[in-house]
Amino acid sequence: MGNFPRKPPSIPVRLTYCFLADFVAAPIVRALDRTGHLEPLLRKWSEKRERHAIAKNPFRGYVPGEQDVFVMTYAKSGTNWVLQIV
Figure 1 (cartoon, helix red, strand yellow):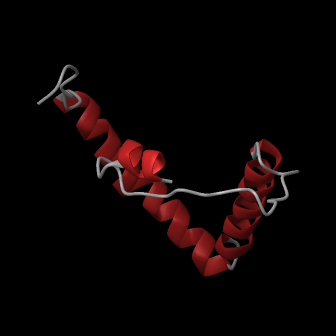
Figure 2: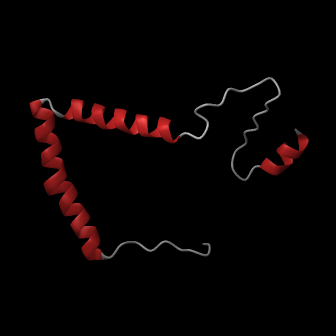
């Protein structure tokens, strides 16, 4: 399984998550949807997340040139081999 097997949360933690999801979050989301506030709120969160991703992007000022080569492979499918070939 690997060096760091994942342990599931304890039963009280799982019950708390279920309670919060079913009896707190779901009614709030339904109420926001009925009043028409859910879509603008989700749009605002999405725009904020997109702005954050753009600001954090290390390639934001990068312009590819003719000499640049991009090598893309699936994980564990011979990435180093492909890089050596290229």
